Image 1 (cartoon, rainbow, N blue to C red):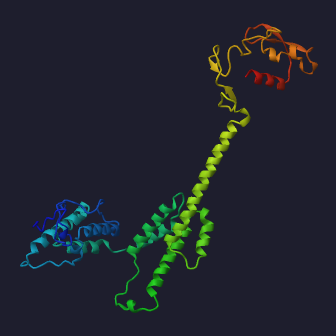
Image 2: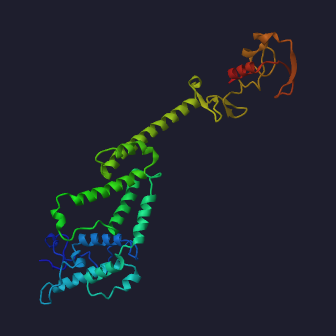
Image 3: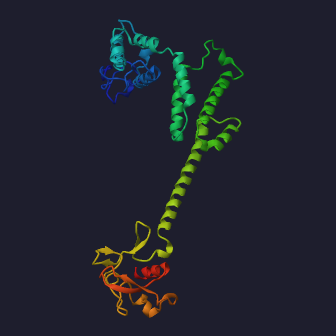
Length: 352
C-alpha cells in the first residue's frame, strides 16, 4: 500500500483525499506566473483558487477542512498539507508582501488577511473601469479581439461591484422572477454598450439587432456580426483579385501579346528573342538595326528597302523638299525627306 502522503501517478484512489500530496508538490513552487504586488487582487485570487482547486487543496483557504485534534491519526497529514499550501501562496506574492505575512499560523489565516487588505473595492477602481468601458471601441480590431477586451473589463467590474445576493432566502420563494429580470437588464446594458463601440461599417446590422424583440444575447449578436465580417473579408478579397487582374491586363494589352515579347518598365514591348552583338542588348539584331546599316537601293542610312521612299514614293509628293541631315553614326551627310511624326512612328514599328 502506498504512503498516504505521497501518491504516485497511478494512485487514483487517493485523488479525492485533500491530505494527499503528489511527488510534484514542492514547497518552492508558485501557484501563478505573475506575483501579486498589490494590484488586481481579484484576478490574482482567481488564478490561485483555480490552481488550488486543481490540486484539491482549496478547502485549506476557506477553512472547510477543519484542523483535526492532535489525537487524530490524520493530524500530522493535515499540518503537512497546510504548511505546503501556505508556502505556495507566499511564493505567489512579491517579497515585500510575503515578508509581512510569513508569521501567520495557518493557511486560512493567511488567506483572510490578504482579503482584508486587498479585497476592498474602492469607488476609484470602479470609476476607472467604467471610464475604460465608455471609451473602448472596435477601431481596427477584429470582432473577437474587441469582444475579448469588453468581456475582460465586464468580468473585472462584476468582481469588484457584483449584483447583491439575497441573504434571507426569500428570493427562492419569489414568483415574479425578479432576479432573472435584474440579470437580463444588466445583460441588455452590456449588449448596447458592445454595439455602441462597433465601427460605422456595422451601422445597418446594429440597427437590425436593436430592432429585435426580445434582444439577443451578446453571444448570439457576436455570431451574427461575425458572419457579416466574413462576408466583408470575402468581398474585399475578390475585389483585390479583380483589381490585380485588371492591372495585369492593362500593362500587356491583348493586341500586343505577341510570342517572344515581354514588357519594359515604361510599359512598351521589346522582342526578347533578338540580341544585338554591337550594343549587347536585347530587342533587335545588328543586321536589322537601322543606325548601323544603309539601304542598298538609295545607299542611305536610317531605313531598309521596305521603307525606302525612293521605291515606295514620297508622302504627299513632297520629295522635292529635301534638307541636309548629318548621319549620327558615320558622320557623313545624307539626304533624307522631312516626314510627319506619323510616318516616323510607322518606320519604328516595322524595324522593331
